[in-house]
Length: 246
Image (cartoon, helix red, strand yellow):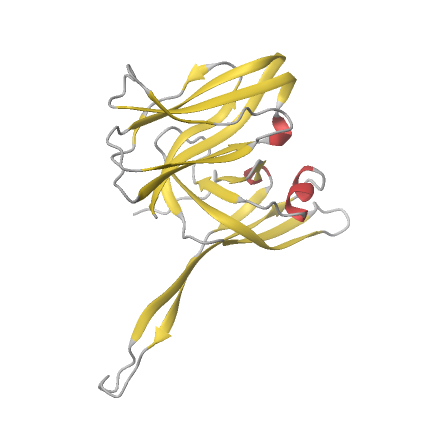
């Protein structure tokens, strides 16, 4: 398989679009290894997998106002969502996990851009892999493209994080209302509302996470959005869907 250049990652940390600042990104998964060698091991080491931990490291350049203000004081709840495409579309693979910021460093040399390095650790679960439901700029009310995510079994929970780039919200008294719907087919002739997100403004609710427990047999999902305000209300936002066993 040919190599692929990393040119278009999309990195979201709550309401911060880190991809506008980042030039390098890595998200390693590590698992501790427990030594269980005993006298009956026939002279061989025996090991068992232990605790797992997802991490992420972002390196790049910083706007010391928009970026530093967000990263300097970590929020009570934080989530990173990301995918590898410059212009992701509905259905593209995406990943997300709840995080705590473990370290943050910024600085620079005279005449050079101010650099940043920020490291995150998973809070209490490994990474969730799912699919993009929306990515991009919204200026008008509309229905999102439906996606067949598959069934959700009892004991599984659906996660839909919603990241809105606070720094680029524009317009006079702009509002964004987002509703998560599901249906039995792509036509959405009889949609069911799974979750209504709190109204998003230029100063509130720019990061939210919706969770819905299984079992669910209606497999198609979409996000319906309503724009309010005057003066060209604009929102740049990202959302995805994933599931995990709880």
